Image (cartoon, rainbow over all chains, first blue to last red; front, side, top):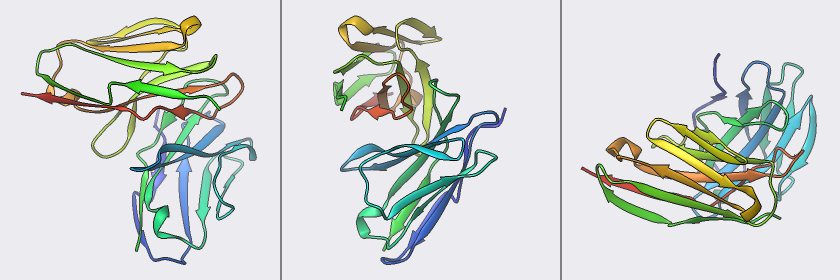
Amino acid sequence: KAGVTQTPRYLIKTRGQQVTLSCSPISGHRSVSWYQQTPGQGLQFLFEYFSETQRNKGNFPGRFSGRQFSNSRSEMNVSTLELGDSALYLCASSLQNNEQFFGPGTRLTVL
Amino acid sequence: GIQVEQSPPDLILQEGANSTLRCNFSDSVNNLQWFHQNPWGQLINLFYIPSGTKQNGRLSATTVATERYSLLYISSSQTTDSGVYFCAVAYFGNEKLTFGTGTRLTIIP
């Protein structure tokens, strides 16, 4: 069974731009969660989607948004990028209330 | 929200040594997972262990849910065990994982 995949793996953007990251969950998994990892803040929860609905949201500004498609694939978008948005963005999928599996991440650098 | 503390923050050992990593959490949880983050940043699942004891080769883990802690044991350490180990927990019915700050393990040949 294929694991969680994320694209792109690396991304360089400039301040003020926007970015879209993609995540394909493990086949059969309907829950997709997003996390941000930075050296200063560690791993922080962004949001979780299940059956195309956002069920849970972390403490991030409205510039961070996401969506989930009918095939469970998910995208997250960050608008008006700031230097502090430079981070590793990780996506995880799971069957409901069960073990979560992570993708390889997208490393975003904002210049 | 739930608090997760990991100790020690850093651990340096000789190859072949054994180690114990600890995770304390502040509330009852339904999900507890241990991860190893590889040098490229991917979180590798080690154990899904909300309670009880599990073993996988040289690694084993124990969670005592009533006392709100979990332990990860690594025996006969190898240099490939180096990296950061994270503990993460979640409440029942909530997919949000709260992570500890990790233990950085360095195995010296």
